[in-house]
Length: 287
Image 1 (cartoon, rainbow, N blue to C red):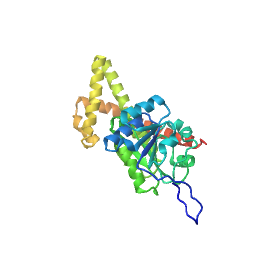
Image 2: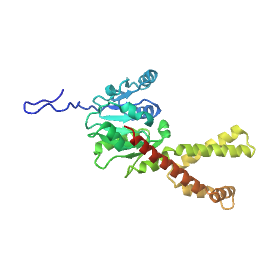
Image 3: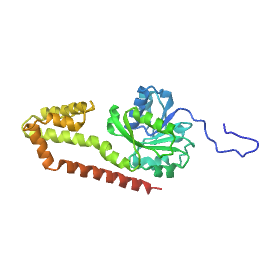
Image 4: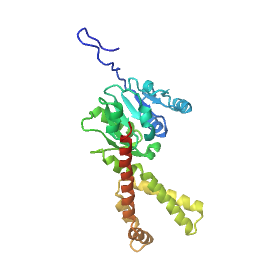
């Protein structure tokens, strides 16, 4: 209930916060986070989801045992943290008319939406954390770049890290503009590896391998190389170890270097980072 005294006018009603985490949006990334949190030991009773699609709400409730809501206001009532997990293009309408209690921790995983934009939409008095996960989070093998203003309290940072850490590794950034570089590297990065695997299998088929054989070889080489990188050995050293002087690998690597592979990737990441910044400006202009 609201707090009243005989000497002061009634203050704004601030619901007592629970340990609940509410998700606005119940798509694939939200489902991955929910599953990861439950696997990490957080009770399903502490998780809520707002999802406008009735079939999706039913699936989330059945799969995870969480409470689901059609209205965002019902899902977030009294929650300690709110995860914004709708598509960036839908964010403004999803948050329209929504009032979040002061002190709530707001964790956004929406690409391109800056903290000042969220603050303009939702108001001051909230603790904002902006995150950029990537799709391997769906396999609990992701990595997320996180940024929060220097004044953000430690418990807000910790909750954000607990949520995103349930699906992979986390790195904190010193400046929000670095999110654009994270988007270009790890956010878009899985597509680069998939494209490289695609190109390798096509080149191998052109050399005469059956398409299915080329597909299996390219995919498993990708998987095996990634597992070697997981050992912590620097990838440059791993590359050197497999590149025998005068051998086949050296011939291929020298050709890639001469053809400007490093320059192409530098330009590709720059293009992705530039687009990320452009999207931030675009969303910032929304009323």
